[in-house]
Amino acid sequence: MRETEESKRFLSPFMLLNVLRVTAIVMLTEVPVAALSSALIAGEVLQPQVIAGGLLIVLSSLAAALSLRREAGAQHA
Image (cartoon, rainbow, N blue to C red; front, side, top):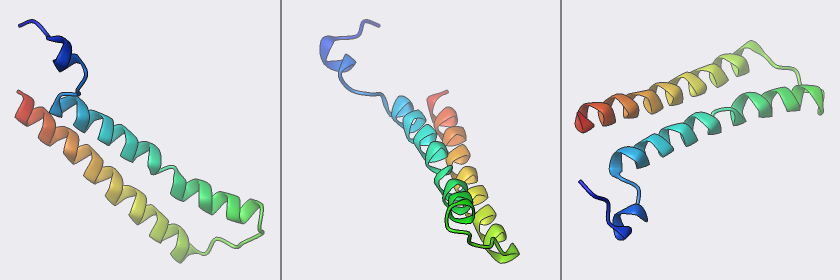
């Protein structure tokens, strides 16, 4: 199947989900970087509750991003 000039300008739904998944995973680095920088720069004490909460946020977002990948793969196949 040949790609037309118009179809080259837009991302397919599968490619778009891939881009969104990668973006979500990259944005997850914001939580640990913010926590570490507040500890190193501002002298904040990282309490166990804060670390546990940050871990829950990162893990749940990562699970959601990876499930998008599985759903996209199942629909694409």
